[in-house]
Image 1 (tube, rainbow, N blue to C red):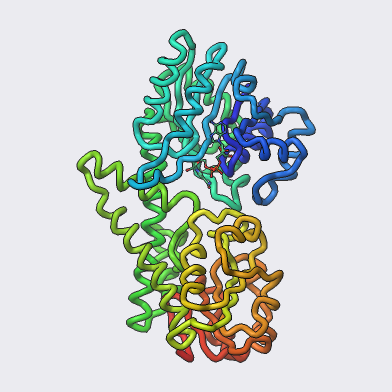
Image 2: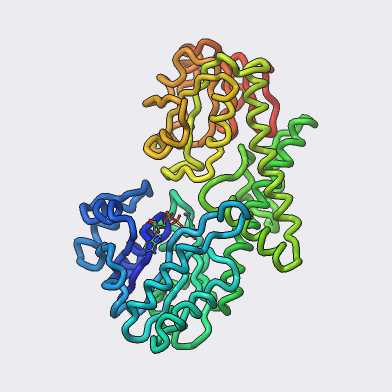
Length: 439
Ligand SMILES: NC(=O)c1ccc[n+]([C@@H]2O[C@H](COP(=O)([O-])OP(=O)(O)OC[C@H]3O[C@@H](n4cnc5c(N)ncnc54)[C@H](O)[C@@H]3O)[C@@H](O)[C@H]2O)c1
């Protein structure tokens, strides 16, 4: 198969590289010439474990190339994937479809033989139909179908998720398009990964429903965590106790500082708006958005309490800035709410993050960046564990306590046990949904 991938961000690049690894001939397109120049030079513009090696292998096999020339990539392709961003539109919380529709117009002008135009971006119901209308209007003679193929990969585990998916969703209107999509995903089909074929609208809805459900599950345990703190229960034990129930499952039950990232905030917001527009308010999702905002604010109160009621003049070491480990993605990370609040309250903030600094420096003005947790903690009044990178999971707690002016920790990911911190010489600790000490 010949595939054009429009957009080489976290989804487009991973998908393009993985499709080429399936044996397809893939051309990845991006508007951003700097990204394409980096890719042409063999550099990966994002941090995603394993992506550099897989990319090099497929470039070497001459199945994978990069260009800014969309027309050249689209001409002769069997399938053209749209994997551009769909961020929240300023002002109203809707998904901004500007990039998707612009890509559709560019694709229309470049179509040659029969082509399936596949939307991989997360888009509201009706977008694929609109993409078809745009192409038909711009190129009435074009021989094409549209397909909806939402992506479920997780940053940080993206290659494995793409290569070993729980399922692939393919929304189509014609058998011809279904056949092309079956060829595209044949390597997964042959290995018995479920390929679910639906209509366009259901495929579009599945993606929003999945993300809203996951955001709800996280928010549920975060709210339970707040109550655990009040009643003296430990949310880790509670999560384990409910997660062993097969109907509930143990994933997405880790209490923390509230969800962030490139998808949940914008997708819950878009779903809430879609519901309002159709006079079918998504009341649960609206509550989730509100509770998640409160959870994030509660974290600032926790850190303030840990510091004795004010962070003014305190030096705070923040471990982790990205929205989760194993990515450099800073979009809607909890750090973007918490760090400015601390700096606004008069704290000096030092951040350490294995991959977040390149993006984070501009996004978190006023903070300084340290190379490792120990230099960040030197002379500090508190440590805030914000992103549970592996390298923060087995710290020398005694050494940390010895370096700090006052050994206090807000562990917002519940990585450490209170007893271990106490033994190491910490004088105060607060976690999420469990008892602290020294407060
Ligand atoms: N990031 C994730 O983990 C994830 C997971 C599943 C689904 N999604 C969805 O996938 C879509 C893409 O997300 P992302 O995180 O990869 O976005 P991104 O912002 O990382 O990448 C988008 C890329 O598209 C390029 N682009 C925009 N318009 C273009 C055009 N007309 N022609 C060529 N290139 C163009 C941009 O320059 C950018 O490089 C979104 O709809 C998102 O919701 C993301």
